[in-house]
Image 1 (cartoon, helix red, strand yellow):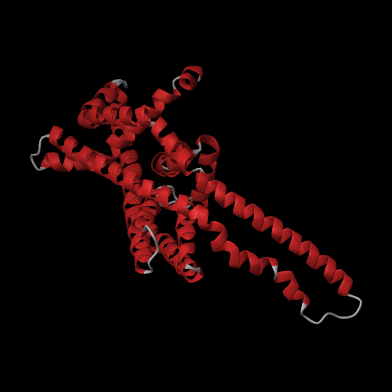
Image 2 (cartoon, rainbow, N blue to C red):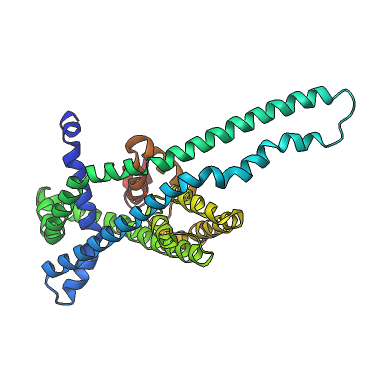
Length: 336
């Protein structure tokens, strides 16, 4: 455990490289079956990866610039709302009050007004702080550039040699257990691979719904918001909340009608995902109850943070496969 802790940066690079190789292995195999050399297949995959990274960099830079400008205009934009909230207690006092209750309502009104003023002031400071730290996020991303490049380089080697690496790992097991290990690996690949690729497809569809919807109602950077919605949607149940914040903030520049319409589009995309896309595309791969999935994600976040959120459901898929395909079919389960 100590050695693993000391080598955690190297292990992170290795895990990320393996994820790249694992996710794009079917595409390389598909091209190889079409008589395209494996090395050319890897080049095609990496061209697509760098195209996505370049596009993402441009879009994220636009978001940071736009939100930085938005931070300057934020007090003016929120002024009507804050004024309405702060004057709400005075409006309540216009309602006829029975005699003897006026003092109580005056005290309650004053307390309520103080609470609202404190809340709105804190909200304004929090939003400003969030927007002004956009530059620090870029610095953190630049700081991890070396790890990203190393992971991509290592991922290319793994992607090219993944079949041979798999055979080498299999030979590490005793020969008598190799058929069972092969069977287990195929079932795990079916469960995890189907989930991972299904989740990517769902994220793309959700991103398109959000991007097109926001573009129709005229929200600034609608394409970028759609991209962020798809990107964060790779984190189940959590991504939709995170991706909604910048979209709603930008919608404020168009007035409260734009905010309401934006919220409607985000809710529509979320319900499309929950009611139709996940059950049809992802649900068949893992067949895990939503409550179990949420608990698994929360536990993963507590243990490994973002990595835990990403790996929670694939881990649950493997555990369920072991439970149904091996434990429930075992002699111990049937005979005790």
